[in-house]
Each structure stands twice: as structure tokens, then as C-alpha cells.
Length: 119
Image (cartoon, rainbow, N blue to C red):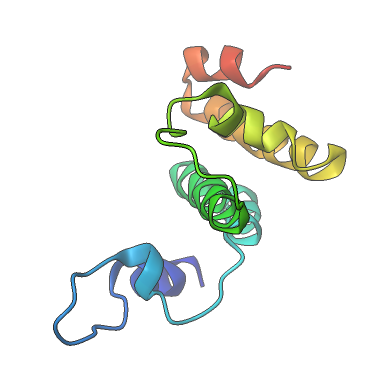
């Protein structure tokens, strides 16, 4: 199942006369966080990290689009950093994301990322 989702993510529906943008052209609704959990369960650690990051980016993008306040450059601000965004998603969701990241980075041996995941 992970291979099918990965294939769909890499090969989005093509639209004529437009640039290929994987995140915007994906024609099915996927909960990237649930895919990340499935990947973690299957010991596909790099895939779990990928889909956790995709979930974070898609949620941050939705949040930016829904805000009415226009910032000239908010991409570098602390309030829009991935870790601060994860922390703002509620205790249960933040705990789940940190658990996925901590487990996956531990299993691939990335000690720098592990220290970054500890709260």
C-alpha cells in the first residue's frame, strides 16, 4: 500500500499547460500523517519521515492560506517553523508527530535529529 501511495505522490494527475506541482496536483485526498504512521509501523523509516514532513508542509500551507493577515516574508519566522507548528497542533497530535520522528530518527541513527525531537 505504501508503494501505491508513493507512486501516486510521484506521478500526479497531469494538467495541460501547467507546471507539475506534486502537492497541488495530487488528485486524491491523503492523510499524510496516517501514511507516516503506517510507514513507521512497517519499519519504512525514511518514508515515515517523508510523509510526516509532507503533512507538516500541507498543514502549514493550509494555515497560511486561511490567514487574512499578509506578511511580506513569514517563511523564516519562528512562528512558521515546522517544530513550532507541530507544537501548536494540540497535545495529542504533537505527541504523535514527535513520537513518529523520534522513533524514525532513532532507527536510522541520526543522533542530531534525535536531539532536535526531544521536547
